[in-house]
Image (cartoon, rainbow, N blue to C red; front, top):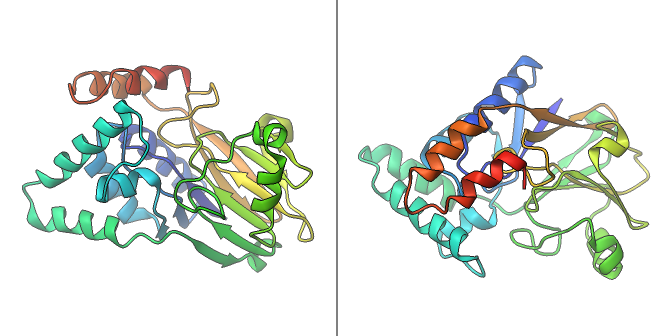
Length: 257
């Protein structure tokens, strides 16, 4: 099995709960689709955990924003990026500080893997989309509002593509259609001759009205969506205690939105 995590957003309790669940299942390899930082109160701790546990980590738009500059971010997200940058810069341990910045600076935007071991074809991993790997959103409503966009995205990969970014887990098919995890019984059975784009959801800031952390497992000829409970209230309190972070970034965690 292979675990895919994404959009941790500086939420250590959520990440620790997911890592514990992955370890309990005996999964040895973890891929992270980006946005390790941003929004939440514990960027340094989350970076350290991802550096220690993920074999591959990709660049998310918030990782990019903290490293370079936030582009088209709302006020709260932008302020969180600037606070995160200061938090990382103020690390007293020079070796830790440099290691985190070097890690962020070395993140790749795309990763491709042969899926032979799982009875699958080529597997493509990105944060946003195959067209704009770092910052293009693919929303469930796009199947109705912009089917040409979905068609163009499916032209960019040959079998399965895994993304994050919207924090909404589910499966897109070329029809175009979108299936929430509940509509496939939390397990999407793959076909080596058919394409699908899979959003793995968010570890640290779910937005599908389920406040549990979300990640995916690649199994034999299937992708499993997994939800994990964690101490949401503890994270909310920590966000509210930091003046530079908008309270909403914590409160929204309770409702998974």
